[in-house]
Image 1 (cartoon, helix red, strand yellow):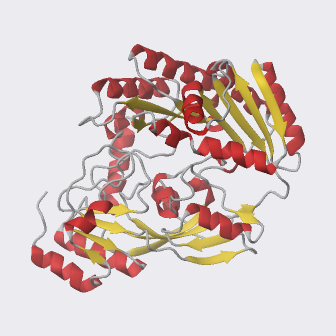
Image 2 (cartoon, one colour; image 1 turned 45 degrees about the vertical axis):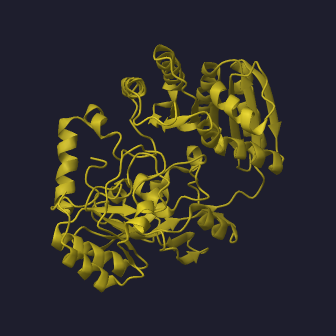
Image 3 (tube, helix red, strand yellow; image 1 turned 180 degrees about the vertical axis):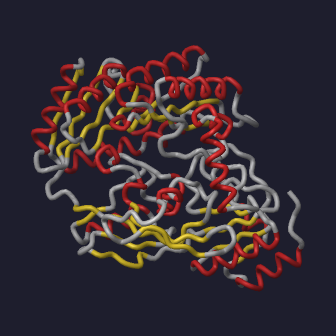
Length: 459
């Protein structure tokens, strides 16, 4: 990548000011990678720390005029290399655009900037008896912009949907610096193409989102009822999930952890793991019929050979169990270096997918703890390997490819919520096919004819 001339970078600094433009390599370093992607970053020419949409516009106009690739960035909590830099690029960070510009209890919506932390928006909504439903495991640190870029999910999406299901409209800056507004504030609206849905999940390859109009939902009026079930094997737990889905009781949460995950949690947090427990399923219902729904879920677990089933409406107990689930990745990372993957299959195929992961891990002699947003058929197999290696071992990549192929063979997808980023582009055509890839590239070329928006990512 050819570096932009120093005079051009000076023009950028002059246009935006020293407080918004970083050029010192030591200060830039923290903006070059995401959390776990193992992608070697390049050296940016500068970082723009945007405070307003106008800052983003100015930065993108400069980038377009100078043919400089742009890497949009939020909190950097992604794990697929979506914000990994290349030499000579311009990073545009929206992490300091943190305003909740409007919160309307009457219309059950909020208008927010992309740097708002997910949990902060939910907390603000709760003060009005509402909630922001999407809740990725990193909800306490991830930002709305990144959630929008990857169409993030979370623990509650089995009932409330992923990020796209909570987006009414967007404000975004295109590659040429032009500001557009998409969508609406109304519950219904079908005017024109669905550019809002197109931008959500586009991973910064079509533009940079500078504001979002988000749907809020009434917060549950009563404490949820929680079911915790233990199983002798993970396949039985997956069968219980499918039974719960077929029962149509509307669970608000269905999370599954396998033995290796539970062991990592027990080694760290001493959760009192029974030696015979090889999987745990956490279920919740939060509606007015929560008690009855929870009993149906408990019965489904019992019918599918659960060894222990506990039902509770105690909020403190529920919070403690969910905290354990949210700590799963941190616990696994204590074992070694990790490649955290993300596949999704039809829920009827969840037992088959868990069996495939176990088979592939054994064939490659790998430790692959797996957690799942099981109610969505969304599994996160985590490939663990020795720390300190220069690159991910070939056995890990071979096993990951087999997991991807297994998911596709079962009618699934390469990613349910983490995004494609850099790491999964190699397998895109296997899922999408030539014609669909061509259609997606045509959209990309129409909105980003110079190819400067997050090159090498997503498509």
